[in-house]
Amino acid sequence: MSDLTNSMKASTMSVSSGKSKVKHNTSTTENTMDKLGLNNPAFWYSGGFIALFVAIALYDGELLSTIVNAGFSWAVQVFGPYWQLLLLLTFLIGLGLAAGRTGKVMLGGIAKPEMDSFRWMAIIFCTLLAGGGVFWAAAEPIAHYVSPPPLYGAQDNPQQGAVNALSQSFMHWGFLAWAIVGSLTSIVVMHLHYDKGLPLKPRILLYPVLGERALKGQLGALIDACCIIAVAAGTIGPIGFLGLQVSYALNALFDIPDGFTTQLIIILFAIALYTLSALSGLSRGMQLLSRYNVILAMALMVYILFFGPTNFIFNGYIQGVGSMLDNFIPMATYRGDEGWLSWWTVFFWGWFLGYGPMMAIFIARISRGRTIRQVISTISIVAPLTTCFWFTIVGGSGLAFEIAEPGSVSAAFEGFNLPGALLAVTQQLPMPMLTSILFLILTTIFIVTTGDSMTYTISVVISGETEPNGIIRTFWGVMMGVTALILISLGSGGISALQSFIVITAVPVSLILLPSLWNAPQIAIKMAKEQGL
Image 1 (cartoon, rainbow, N blue to C red):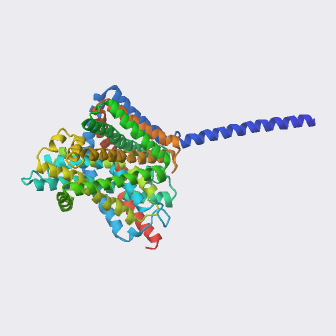
Image 2: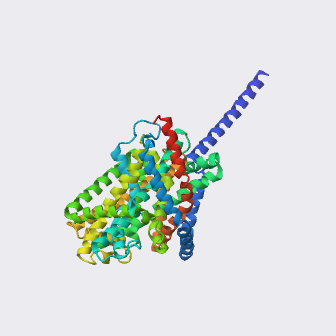
Image 3: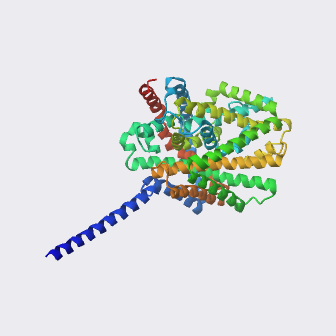
């Protein structure tokens, strides 16, 4: 009887051990699935949508263009005025919070910043400015000079035409553009994440309005997916443009064939660089790339100031900023020519809006220990004024060369050739070959830092962890690069469709950003009271 009892006990223990192993294996599998984000519906919504976009592009490019163009026209017509007001109010409310007692509010629940100021500002500049800081800096001023903005109109005086062109460029890349990608939204995200313990996901921006419904279920997943799709599209586009534009420049400089093979090599190099950087973490690769890129940008600024049209640059910057401030509200609210707006102001607003929620998460991640005044003054004032000066350095030099010799820049820019405009500027400076190469390196690293930060941020949102699994970082980094490759393999139409699609994605994202207009001030006032300010 004793043997039988012992046998039964052993059998029971064996079964129990088996069950324990099954449970352990199941929990391990589930844990792995969570880390990879495979249990997150937002992963399937966003990934599936991007896959569908690429599939339609491969199946019928013309069909995709027709659908996207119809959506683009509807978006800019219906939401254009709303976006203009949203950006203007975001900037003005942010200034108010920074200037008042709420400006002293400490964000993130710690007294000392985790990152020193230079590295922090370098990452912000490189991530938010992206590749636009080079090609658009050269091209947009000459574009507005050749075809004057309707608010200003044609000018008999070339100098005044140049100032107006710079002023309009400053509006598109200045205060409002920077404010929407991380001023008010960063306050909301940092408070809800660090003080309330909510997950670092876009859905928390709607938590003050929707409560728990925003955090759970399909609604929260859809909110996250919309923001992921928007920022992925906004990142895939520049990666594709990098391949096209650098390939053009290499052909012009070294007679390297400007074809898909060259574009493939360039984009694969960029994918490898930003994926490795993302894998190394915020404290290593991203900081290193950003720091050296800022140093290179500063070196090029000093070089052009010394050897370029120095007097014109300083005068153009001062007058351009003055003209922008004088016409700030009229330019921000201009509705006189909707066709022009759809391809300039509203297009840029849609692009920048798409980055808003994910950039808020990124800024929240790197800005812990900063005050509201530090965050808003850096993002909404210092960074825009620096960007405007950079545009004057690059684009202003182009305007000076164009005034001195008509056609020297505009002829190269004809047909909206962005890299052509940049090369037309660099080729008129001393050591043109070296200068051109350094600008191409600068552009590449700008794009890489954006790809790096967005790969990291998407991975954070999908995995729910502040230090996401390496596999998920690699997946999103490679996926965005491969998508760019597929689209450029179809010709310029694929990237053009994506460019217009970016504006469509801004529609739901702009609605997600709207509550921050009143939630950020409420949170700032509440925190000021709690901190005894």
